[in-house]
View 1 (cartoon, rainbow, N blue to C red):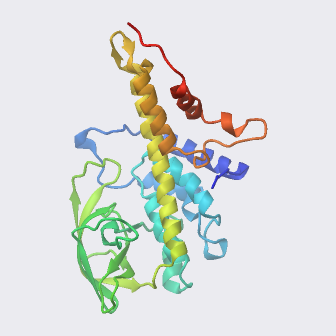
View 2 (cartoon, rainbow, N blue to C red):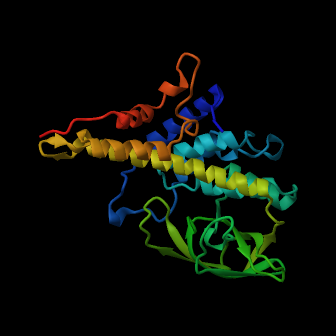
View 3 (cartoon, rainbow, N blue to C red):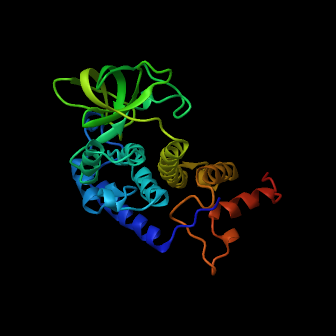
Length: 313
């Protein structure tokens, strides 16, 4: 399926790009080891809320900015490229789950807090079933009535989070999704060192923490969650590719930039085609005046592989 952003979505992407670029100018990436952040960027979080970007995917009648999955993906891709210390996509996953549930005073209050950035909501990926998120961490949660007990080994932005989406064991056969309130004294947080310098980690110990049990997640909700995550990964892949291209132009070997060697060109072209399939990136849009077959640069590079080349002696 080809995704062609609308003019409004392209402008949305440019708005997010400008905001994130302004923040990136003040944040060295990667930061020095002794300056790795252990908390999220509250200033950037508030700026996203002011522009209404945290309300994407939340219906206007429920206090959000409206929009659909395509709008969320446009911003998620930009966030992935910028790599800020910000749980935008993680929060969007929590919002996607809450929006699919019937409106109630508790859920309405959570959505209001997330949209205006007064509440930070993140998922505990290690507790998600393997059919949603492959792999499982060392944590465990037990649900008793309206409270949970347990330990989570590594929660991204866990030191800042006010609310946690997780799966807890109860009397049912499958773990049940719950929204946990992270507050003292029922929550003990310990910051963790992590190789990921953009996602501060923390371990959590919960003792009779208040929780709101949720209903089972439907296939539509799961697909929405994974689609937003995929959009962020496209942005991350694009940033990695651009870094590789830049390095290939700077590093020299045998008196030439390594990017001039055919083997390096082919590797970069293959990475481009696998990380940014046509129609998935919000930064490129086919138009009637620009044939689709000529838009992506990587296609021309890949065609050059079929042409015979003479070996140099």
